[in-house]
Amino acid sequence: MTTGELSQWHATNPDTYLPPGLAEPRPWQDGLDIPYWEAIERDELVVQYCDDCKAHQWGPEWLCHRCHKFDLEYVKVEPKGKIYSWERVWHPVHPALQTSCPYMVVLVELPGADNVRMVGNLIGDPMRPVTIGEEVEAVFEHHKDADPPYTLVQWQRTRD
Amino acid sequence: MSDHPMRGRTAISGLGETKYYKRAAAPDGEFKMCLEAILLACEDAGVDPRDIDGFASYSNERSSPDRLAAALGIKEMRLSNMFWGGGGGGGSGALANAVSAIISGQCEVVVVYRSLAQGQFGRFGQGAVVNEINNDGKWTAPFGLMSPAQSFAMRVRRFMHENGVQQEALRAISMASYFHAQQNPRAVMHGRELTEEIYDQSRWIVEPFHLFDCCMENDGAAAMIVTSVERARDLKPEPAVVLAAAQGSTPRNQAAAHNADLYATSNFQHVAKRLYEIAGVGPEDVDVAQVYENFTGGVMMSIVEHGLCAPDEVNEFFTLENFKAPDGKMPINTSGGNLAECYMHGLELIIEAARQLRGQSPNQLANPEVALVASGPMVTPVSSCILGVDR
Ligand SMILES: [Zn+2]
Image 1 (cartoon, rainbow over the protein chains, first blue to last red):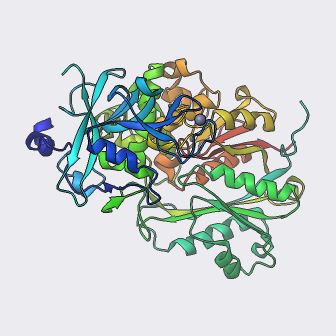
Image 2 (cartoon, chains in turn blue, yellow; image 1 turned 90 degrees about the vertical axis):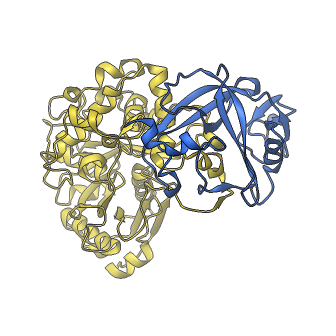
Image 3 (tube, chains in turn cyan, blue; image 1 turned 60 degrees about the horizontal axis):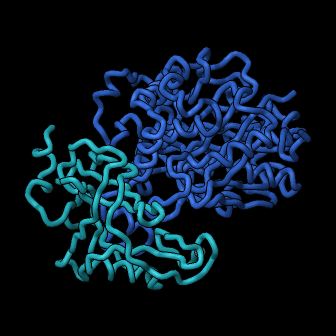
């Protein structure tokens, strides 16, 4: 099996890493993570920060898990990370993924933000070998045609 | 060390299992199979089903105690108990809850049970098809990370990286389950031999999991009767004494977007330590282990975190020879387990542990005295138990 045969989507669609049809992310109904979605729409990466603990937190919670202070601020962080783990997905478990396997999912840690982690796709040839520790930078993938539009934070190798 | 109040006070007496089926192949519905398993467990124990006074289950079991108690004509129900959490994480935890109810005097005869008809109801291995997502799934699902295999592969890959583990270690786990299933006529994969070649050539589901690293999806039901050890001595079978059963989690294990404090883990570090303290035995005393295989990578981390193998010795220790009953260094999953006997959410693993201590396993060890069961790993909470012989 070659990538070309399997992964028709990657070969022909540069704008989004995966095809449309997957569940679209929405903010929590209580508004907890609205600042994150608004920031990445502007190509800015933010995470929560506790000014008392001087520490970042991710995913978003209503309070700091260290000191229990409520209503943490969202602060801008450098959109750079290191690959902490990875997986190459071959079996589509969702109808929208039938033409996009294999694809690469990475877990990225952010050294500039107390090593909080984010899940995303690693842009590029999914068959290219991945090394844990590789440096990556964020790519803001805008889904402008969605209703309402939304943005995903993807990753690409810094040295590419 | 003084005796722990849980240690050795209760026993598993009755074991009941329906025939195990491929997914959607059961001729009966889930609730009917559940009744059948409970009656079989009662018959095995020699107790009147109407004397059951407690019900304990896990994983959002659909056959609820209210309906079971009515159907069975239970004289007086004193416990209706559900362990929170999905997957097989609660198998030993449901046992722990049954044991606690008996020791605290709330109940005398508790049935621990699980019934599954994935043909009648939904499957576990598929991603949900929904238009939008506003829970913590939003941090993973839009990137095509949504099934259990995909959720756990990330942790397993990190563990393999940190400890230099090779793919062959995962293969040995799968081979052991299939090897043992060949001696077990009840196993769904009886007659389906697995070789290294078949494993290596099988398709990837999600790296590092081949097809044979992933559990089956099955139909069936299983039940166990738990009583005080004194009452168990008056019943028909040899009691399998509960030395310990415990549940729990490491800190923030399910923090959103894979932000657990301890990431590359089956989540057993704290539970295993407490389990051995309750039981009054150590990893060196374990004769046989039944280790829940949702995916082989979870088995690997469960074995390490229960102290049966050092993390940097996985490549050497994880061989089919070491995992084989009766003479391997640490026989595991001696009925075929979730991979090859039946995916009964791991209740079949506790039943097999009891069977080993009674001398009734299809892959019987010579006089085992201590059997470990690690229930579903990598979820929150997880649970495990240690069974022993009566003396
Ligand atoms: Zn704080």
